[in-house]
Every structure is written in C-alpha cells, then in structure tokens.
Amino acid sequence: MSTNPRDRLDILERSETDPEQSVAVAGVSGTDTESEIHIHSLIFTPKNTQKLRQNRRRRGVENWPAGMAKYIRVRSLCVTYSPKLDLYTADFGWGKARKVEVTSIEGETYGMSLCNSRDCDCGLEIGYYRARTTTTTIMTTILQTLQVSPAPSPQGGAAAELTLPLTFFDMWWVHFHPIRRVLFYDHPCSTADFLNSVVPNLEKSLSLTLKHFLPAAGNLLYPTDTAKNKPFLRYAGGDSLRLTVAESGLDFDELTANCPRDADPFWDFVPELAPPADAGEYKHAPLMAVQATHFPGRGVALGIANLHLLGDGSAVNASLILSWAAISRSAGDEDFLRLQQKLESAPIFDRRVIKDAVGIDGIFWDEMRKTPFSPAPFPLPTNRVRATFALTRSDLEKLKNRVLVKKPGLNRVSSFVATACYVWSCMARSEPDGDDAYELLVVPVDARGRKNALIEPPVPGNYFGNCIAFAVVEIRHGELVGEGGFEAAAEAVTVEIRNGVNEAAALLRGAEDWINEMKKCQEKKMKVFGVSGSPKFDLAVADFGWGKAKKVEYVTLDGENYSMSLANARDGGGGLEFGLSLPEKRMEAFTAIFADGLTK
Image (cartoon, rainbow, N blue to C red):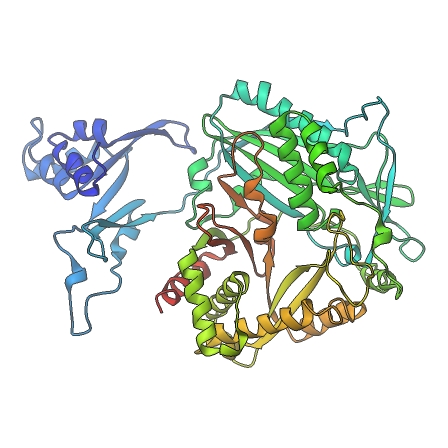
C-alpha cells in the first residue's frame, strides 16, 4: 500500500461504490467491551453519502435513512472537511491561520477532520476526536500470585537476617506514598509462552536478584509505641516478595502512546503493596512488590511498587531493577557478579556510612511519629490524563540559548535545568493564580560521592538506600508566568545548584531544619512542582531479554500536585522526554503553551 496519505485516502474513496464493499475494505472487526458482541467499524466520507444514492438495491435520496439504518450498530468514524476546502488559506490581513479546529466533530462518537498540512509539504493534517466511554468489563485479570524468596547461597545456606536502622535520609520518607512505575515492552508472545517461559524466567531471575538485595524481600517494622521505639527495615528468613501475574485486554499501543490518555487504566499494571500486618510491638509492611502483565500477542508490562524507605532512584532504579534486568537477560547472576567485582559496585547496605552527629534522624522522627502510619491507597479515580512530551537536542539548544542571551553571566545552562524550568514555567501559566502567590521548584539531588557539610567521607556511590538532598527555588507566580519568567527560573536554579549543591560547605548544611522549612512552605500555601526520575537513572535501558523498554510510566505522578518524570529521549538523539499527569483541561492548556513557547 502506498505510504502517501493522499493515495491511501483515494483507495478508500474508490472502494466505496457499495457501502457493503466499504465495510470490507475500510472496516475493522472488534469487540464491544460493554455488550461483548462483535461490531464493525466503518468510515463515512462525503463520497460514501453520495454513493449511497447509487446503491443498486436502494436508489433515490428518499431512501437514505433506510440505507443508513442498517449501520446503526456499526461504529462509525465520520470524516468531515476536505483538503480541497482549505481554511488555512483564509487571510484576513494577518497572514494564514495558525491553527484550524473543526469543533463540529465533537458531536460524533469518533470524528476526524482533514485538511492540508500547515507546513505546505504536500502532506495532510488530521484532527481526531473520540468521545469518552465507560467500560464496565474488567480488562485486566489476575492469573496467579507468587511469593519469591531470595535464592540460597552457592553453599546451600539460606540468606542471613539483615536489620537496617533508618537514617535521617530515610526518615524524611516515612509517610510518603509508594513509588510506582510501569515498564512496557514490545514482546509478542502467546499466553502459553508467557506463563511457561516468561514468568518462570522472571521468577528465577528475581529470586537471584533478591539474594544480592535482601531488603527488597523484607519489611518495614513500624512500632506501635512510637515514643519508645523507632521504625527499621528487616529481612528475616522466610520473607518473600509478591510477584503478581496478570493478563490484559487493553490496547497496548494506546497505553504506550505519547498523547493524553486516561490515567486510571495504568493502575491495572502496578501491584498493591499488602497492608501493614500487626505483629506485637511492630506492624510489618512489605517494602516492594512486582507485577508482570501480558498483552496477548503484543507485549509485556512490568509494574514495580516500593516504599520510598527501601531506597531512592539511584538505589531502586539504577541498582536493583537494572540488576534484575541483567540477571534475567543472561539467565543467571554469574555475569552480574563478575561485573560487580570488576567495578567494585556491590551494593552497600551499612547505614554507618551515613554519619549523623547532630542526631537529625531523631529530630525527623519526633515529627513523623505524630502522624499515624497508613500507606496511601490507589488514588482512583484519578480524574487525570497522562501524556509524554519530547524535547529534541535542537529544542534544548534553543532553550539554553534563550537563557544565555538574557542571562549572559551564567556561562552555561544544563539540559536538565532548561527542561525543568521550561516545563515549570509552562505549568504555572496553565493555571492562573495571584501574581504575589509563590511557586516552588524542588529538585532532588543525589548526595552520593559529593563532598558536603555533614558527612565525611562522602557517602559511597554504591550505597543502597536513600541519600537525597534538595535544590529548592522559590519565585513569585507573576514573575514566573511573565515575560522572561522561564529565563529567570533557569537563572535561579542554576545559581542554586552552583552555590547550594556543588559547594561542599553548603550541601546538607542545615539539614536538621528541612522539616521546619517544609512547614513554612505549607503555611504559605506555595504551589510545589517536583521532578521524578532522572536521565542518569534511566529505566528504559532495562533489558530483560526483550530489548529496551518501549515506554516507562511513573504512575506515582497521579497522586502528586504536581510533578514531572524525566528521562532520556527514546530515539537516542540526545534529547529529553518528560511525563505529566494532569486534569484534562489543564493538560490541554499546558500542551498549547508548551508548543507555542518552542516556536519563539
């Protein structure tokens, strides 16, 4: 079939001498998820309507209603407008139109508008509308639940018990919601292959991985008497991690698209962490759970949920999950062990490397214990949509140049700063507020290997746990959304990183006041925008034997006000991509503002 969109359109039009024939050529069979009956999809173009008059069995305009009646149960895509009637050429003295929207298609269940491409490259431009429907059929089914324990040592002995106290880096996250992400993989296979090959390999490789990361199979022990005891992490013999196996009938390609999609279905692919279980003086809460979901003939999704107390992105994403992928890919941990020995990168769990002479862990605990321990449930319905946006290398250079032209004293602006600040400014503009209200950007900073004001020597790079400091920038809403707001934000963040992160005397200085600073922000009712994930800890490279992930979604974003996920662009072209979860109307506003700003 021709790749030219005009040729494909002609094929449809030429085939429509009979509506029955157009069903065969342009129609698609499917299943209605509510009624579970088979239906057809049919495209009606203006020529369809004309050809109905020529139907050899029903002639005359008076028979149109009867001719259309037979398609009442056919799901129709109505094509309106035409490249021949191009409104982009309408010039009222201001030049050609920047955008044409045919709003009448919103009256259809499925509607499409068609016109010439704005860039005059002889292509076509499509506007698409799909009405939201409520599906009552359960589209994801749990097939089995497995409990995976750490593999025994080569000598045959069971893994030893491991107890880890919480450092002040950990205490900060005691009441934080679980971190949840989904990795989607193109891996077409049958249900039998999934259950008989994919799942056993995932189970075996996960068991081998847990042997090297014991805390992931353990629990948080949270005291019932918080005045007497502190929480801690523990792995004990017999502990295990839950692996849920599921199958889904949802559209894999829609889930892995970049365009706005309903956020709720993604929660089908992440496991719920079991609720805390009472066990005498302590409640036991699992630290991690995994779910493998099969899309028959299409792909696999791996959903991974963990309490933030288990570790930060460097620990869980870059160390544990990437190690599991490597062990799965090589069907054993021999290569993993050889690489660890070569790089001296075996995970370090010893909390004594976090030196806390001030007793910050106690300061944080005194505040945290005032709140009852209750892990957050799934925030459903989310009333949000999810979308992914890309910034090419060219886009990033353009944004950085914009900053340097207005702020020449900076000398350099990183791609991270350009992206975070541009998205932050677009987010602020997408929701009006008083000019004197304050906006807050919070950027997590990996403190491993950095000289700082508190811990000497610095925390090793292979430390497994939490080791996150923060770069925080505050700016008035009116300044952020005004002319030069993006450039002002980029300057403020660059200076904060230079003076507050890269200066050893400043990093972690005053960490004991973090909670008080957080309270002040809450009292001022500041709007906080955060960054999740990092190009340095890119989960898309996790290859379990099926290649790199087609898409990574941080489902966690649905429960936050508001954050962006950040990763390297999947095309390998040196750009970045970020994900957002927003109410639909705000997503529409953000999308328009984001795209418009890149043209300046």
